Length: 25
Image 1 (cartoon, helix red, strand yellow):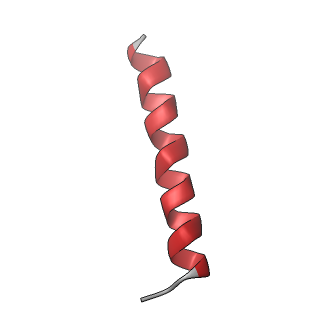
Image 2 (cartoon, one colour):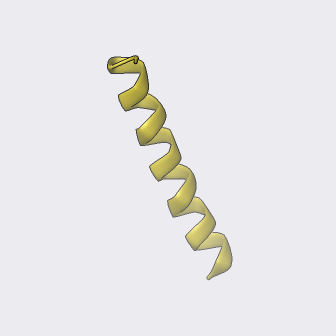
């Protein structure tokens, strides 16, 4: 379960990076 949670967290991190890339501050 921990691995699964970690994976999900990684995905979220990726999405955030994508958003930041699209909308740089």
